[in-house]
Amino acid sequence: MIYAFLDEDAKKEIRRAILKAIAIPGYLVSFASREMPIARGWGTGGLQVTLSVISPEDVLKVIDQGSDDSVNAVNIRKFIENVTNNETTTETEKATLIQSRHRIPEKPLKNGQILVLQVPEPEVLSNVETDSAKQKDMHANEDYSKLWVLLYEDTAQFGDSRIGSRYPVRVHGRYIMDPSPIPKYDTPKLNKNEALILLGAGREKKIYAVPPFTDVEPIKFDDQGFHIEEFKDKRCEICGASGVYFDEIFDENDNPHYYCNDTAYCASRKGNL
Image 1 (cartoon, rainbow, N blue to C red):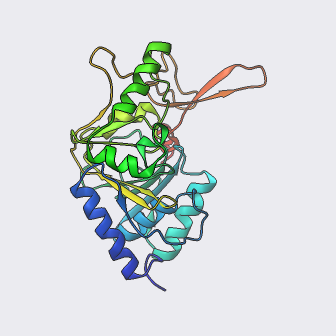
Image 2: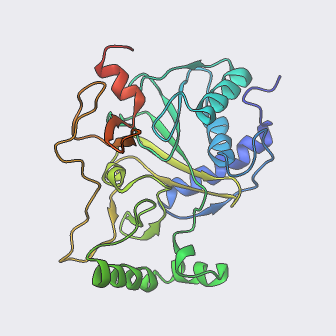
């Protein structure tokens, strides 16, 4: 059996794309996305990146929407485990390689770790410009005026941006990129993160990256701060945590209940790991 499913030529091609992405932070690099044993749109980009960079010594963690136990996370973890025999874990600090959909773990990542984010829509300009040729020209000319107009219109009409996830960020003072559908709560974690962050979009055949300790700033006006989701006075009903990203669940009487979205973080506070 081929280690990590992909043949060596495929992995080399993807690694070259990753190296280019690291050299130009935030820049979209094309790659020859392969057919995978899961449907496009369910994490094939992240999976190909993970399979291309994983080594036999790596300890793998897979999360989906903050959970290690969701169907998507379990299936991807089992698949990678079957084709590599690598050790897996749910503990963020123990993992050397983390594949994630829509969340960055609550516990800070460390130097030497790699976070792979699954990306459905890598082009940050897709909401304001549908022509892909014009999108490339706009990136080349650092012309992000349409994004600024969108931000201005939202601010003028609603007092703040209506973008709840995929909030546009400027990387290393140059390219504005889509950070994948992470909530605004996670956006500040991208800035000067000690871990290498790789973003893969299989359906769109794009890879991009944020190298460790890179400046990442959400776009915002000088007189309008960037606001993340707030859960004032809320505590997790399982572990008692506060100041984290919560799932809000309503019971049959429409009463809200709050639980840590990062299930591994919640379990570690309860001493279950």
